[in-house]
Amino acid sequence: MKTSRLEAFSDGVMAVIITIMVLELKVPHGTDWIALRGLAPIFTAYVISFVYVAIYWNNHHHLLHLTERINGGVLWANMHLLFWLSLIPFTTGWMSENDFAPLPTALYGGVFLMSAVAWHILQRALVREQHNEKLRAALGADLKGKASLIIYLAAIPLAFVRPWLAIALYALVACLWLIPDRRFEAQLARDE
Image 1 (spheres, rainbow, N blue to C red):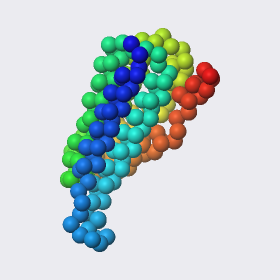
Image 2: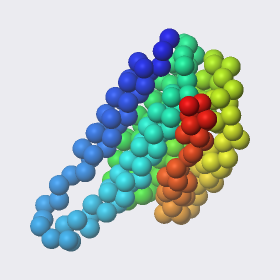
Image 3: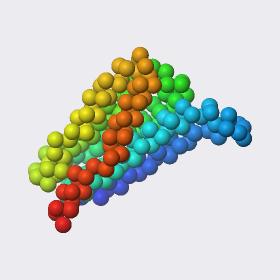
Image 4: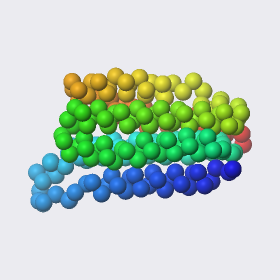
């Protein structure tokens, strides 16, 4: 099976996720800067979550460009990833509406952790299906992926002690991935 339907479906789901998140931003009942102050936690959580979804979308796009075919296992691995990503609007809203309380902040990180695990499963399913050395080479040691998992595992329990430090660690992971990941683009360039 070709990858185009999987990519189109995933693009649509990620677009809906972003749309749901932006709908949580309520218009303030005031016309001055003070009216916006109450939105600061909600907007902060929205920005972090938006960046995460954008990173997954971007990397998903690159991953599928190195993929020629998919099977049922890959489809289910992709659905697993989309399941965890679809929970981002819920945890974003719960955490931000409760001023970054410990449990919602930990659960927010738990969704990011499980999304990262699902991403790893999807990568491995594609490598297994493809027997594709180009894809395997592009993935390499995946140091950023492994570092992300470690940071999540540290941040989640930290959320019960210092929620803002946990948020800072979640933002740190996003910053790590904002630095362009040249692995896929370099492999595509070698192929051309």
